[in-house]
Every structure is written in C-alpha cells, then in structure tokens.
Length: 440
Picture 1 (cartoon, helix red, strand yellow):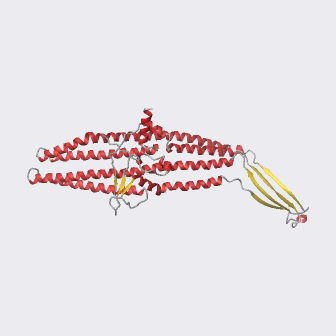
Picture 2 (cartoon, helix red, strand yellow):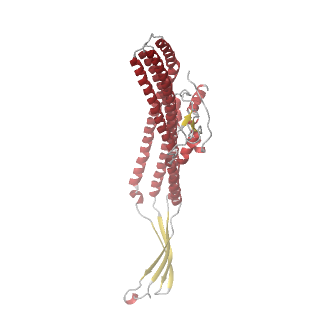
Picture 3 (cartoon, one colour):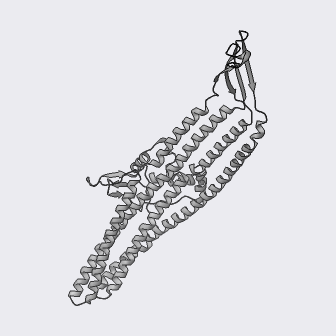
C-alpha cells in the first residue's frame, strides 16, 4: 500500500505562514553535504527561508511599497499656500512715471478642495499598498512552489541514480555469470560481448544521471543566489505520499487564496479610483487675500477674491465613464481568472491522482512479481534453461518499472506543489477540512 508521511516544520514569517502549503508539511526533506564537510544537511524550510531572504523577485516588492509610502505622504498633503507680490502703475510716462503712483499688493492664495478629495487620494494610495502586499503573497507562493519543484527534481534524480546503480550492479553480475558460462563452453562468445556492452551502458547511465543531478542541484541553489552549491545531496522519502482532497474541497479552498484575493484588491483599488474621479467632478474653490499699498494717496487697503471653474463636472464626465468601464472590466477578469484557476486545479488533481495510482500499482502489483521473475529467469539461465536475451529482457523490464515508479512519485509531489500554490493551503489541511465537513 502507499506510505503516508506527515510532518510540521518550523514557522516562517508571520504573513507567509498563512499562505504556506504542503511542501512544508508533507515533505520534510533535507538538502545535504557541502564539498568540504561531508553529510552537512540543510532542511527544505531552510532553503525556502534563504530564497525568501535573497530572492530579487521578492525584494522588488519592498521598494514598491516604499514608493507607495511616498505617494501616501504626498496624497495626505493639503493644497499649498502661495505668496504673491504685484506692483502696478510704475515706471510709466507722464503722471505715472517713476513710482509715485505705484500700487504694491501682497497676497496669500490657496485652494479649498471640495468633494472630499483629500480622503479619496489617501484611500487610493492605501489601496495601492494593499494590492502590492497581495501581489507579493501571490508571487511568494510561486517562488515557494518553484523551490519545491526543483528540490523534488533533485530528490527524484537521487532515486534514479540508486536505481541505475542497482542496474549497474546487476549488469556486472550478469557479465560475470555469462563469462563463466562462456569460459565453460556453455554459452556462445557473443553473449559475453553483449553483456560487456550492457555493463558499459549501465555505467554510462549512472554517470549521466549523476551529471544531471549536479545540474539540478545548481538550479536549486540558484534560487537563493548560490552559484556554487554548498551541498551535494538531498535526503528524503520520495515515496512518502498522501491521498488527494476532493475537487469540490479544492474549489472551496481556492476562493480564499491570494490568487483570487489579488483580483478583489484590484477591484477595491479601482473603486477608490472611481471615487477619486467623482471627487474631481466637484470644482475647487480658489481664494486669495492680501493688502495693497497705494502710493498716490498714501493709503493702504485689503484685497480679497475667490474663483471657481464652471462646468467642471461636464469636463470630467469622460474620465468618469472610463474608470467605471475599467471597474466593470476587472469584474470580468476576476470571473475569467476563477474559471482558469478551476481548470488548473482540475488538471493538476487529475494528474496527481493518476500518479498516485501508478505509484500504488507499481509498488504492489508490478515490481514485486518482476523481482521474482528476475530471480527465476536468472536461475534458469545459470541452469542453461533460458537464454541470455530472456534474462536481459526481464532485467530491463524491472529497471523500467523502477524508473516509472520514480517518475510517478515525482509527478505526484510536483502536482501537489502546484495545487498548494493555487490554493495557498497544505493538502493535509484540505483533506482534514473535507473529512470534518463530511462528519458534521
């Protein structure tokens, strides 16, 4: 039967914990061994923490938030006071020559904003900040999923190397057994040559698999900026798998994930933009006040004035219609995104369930009889009852089955990572939620 393994790693940043997914709960796998210190291990959550701390993709959001904080400060400013000075009737001709009849006016002026524009600007800037935070969570889920997928690549490649080494050992044993029969005159010499070529091929497969693993380790370490990895191995049980939740449970879980929340935040942002545009329909009141010195009569007087643009609402009507149309468009985009995410969940769940079925069938019904068949064929060959070709064919069937088992387990883990990235919830939580709801 399929083996099930659950575990709980340490907590990460508070807001990330709410979006963590099964890779931190179903696969406590360890990255291991530096080049200088053998068997040095690094946990999966440590690899994720390093990625979160060093990923340029995620650090970008920090600067975006800083930019928005600046916008919030700017949006919170009230209209500035303007100081002015005006001189009239000076340096003219005749009676207004010189400055004897000049008039000097000192004024202060500003704008009285109407329509709650200040609050609308602040609300819009704060909505931008909330949206960026939601986008960061979505992007973080993508990054965590990618770290885990690369990690699983290495883990599966290790299992493949083990299978290739077993095949190499068996090919060497086969070559030795064939050599004895050829030396004894019980088998033709060409069988020895074929066995020798098969052994060389098995060795080549091991070396190729090891080189591939080295490249995969490089890809994993690059996630947190290491160009020269300080580990050479990962440790974990590739075949520790758990069953999948139902599709309806995943659909329900998806509704609360950041992948859809980000559209809700975009809708809120656009709603504040509409309110800001509405506020612009209300004309602002411009005012000025000051004091005027009239040199001709040696007197001083106060001056004041107000002004307001006419028909400003009509001039802003087109912009308001535009923002309302964008708001309606965002609602359609959310519906479209929801359908797309439902489809992705459906496909990921189908592939994962098929992979789980393959793993269970290979472990329980295919590999055990092939192991027994190989033992029987080997003994029959040694006794001279079966040909070399039958022995090699059975051996290859077993190797193919082991490789298929590794690939199916790898696919089950990776599609599980995809599901968790979409729902932002560990599969274990989804399964437990589903079980609880059925028993209420």
